[in-house]
Image 1 (cartoon, rainbow, N blue to C red):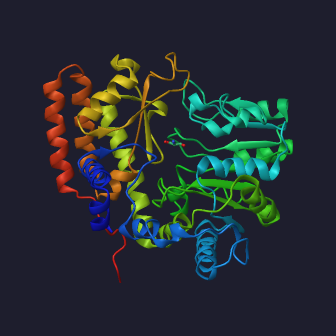
Image 2: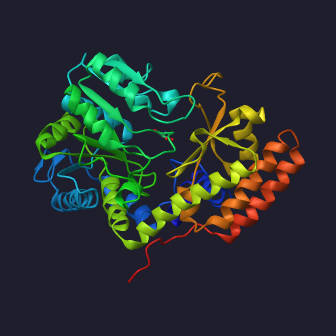
Length: 418
Ligand code: DSN
């Protein structure tokens, strides 16, 4: 395949090689990213990309579904098994479409929804003001507490009682603590709301039993498939049996046409990988690494939102360092450490140049890095912060990062063939 690409489009081939080299020679700390296995990559780059399969297994609008029906059925069965869910839909193109699919399954335009505000760690599609989710629906936003960085269930309950939303959305993109889904379930029940749990960030931890599952409490659970779950870029919905027909109808024909069958195929492979003791060990190490990294960063004088982490993610409040998030992220990038600048709770700075930095351990854990490497990474980050305007120090850190990366090559196979 690479030979064909090199021959037919050397320009793109070279750029892909450059990206491969870049991903291998940098510490990828963006918490929503990972490295997929070669098996997932092969499934994703397979002939399934050639096939149109509008509909669902056994009920398609195109012929030639002898194989796709089998593949999608396997993906659905594996998703139901690992998440212990009544029903799974593996067709959403992304997490955003999955969330829209959940809204569209349970709500009518104009209904009230209540989700976590974006600058406090929520997602655009949880009702943020520029998202269609606040244009088609009436959006009420809750926050985390500025002083603790944690969800405040008194505030959430009060708001829910005041606004009586038709749906409460829980889940986050920048929340370093365990989410108590049972509390959300209790509040939703109390006000007669549906509960949507977006576990895009933590779905790998949920599958591994490292984070409590929302499946017993939520009407619908949405997730991406490429973060801690370590599959291809895609989305998925899990739901209670009573919502199965509405969810399927909402995704197709409600929101999408033909599913991306190459992605569905790769999702099936990723779910098989996730259903192994090796994956459980991986998920445990993600959390252990994040805890170690958090501890070392605090020892280096970094202030962390909520003073630590329970999951894969660490949110740094940079105000005591006097460095804006964007400036730090860009300096780190020059030192081969990839992060993203992020708002912190009650951020006084604007979102395009906020006071925080978001990091996470899924990708570096896939490379086999453990606690001793977390100490090194904290040291590199501190060195860059202390020398934020000193390019020669930043360059030197970059060399050390490259050396570390060379000791932990990007693995091709995560699950050893038996
Ligand atoms: N963009 C994702 C993330 O980085 O968390 C959320 O959609």
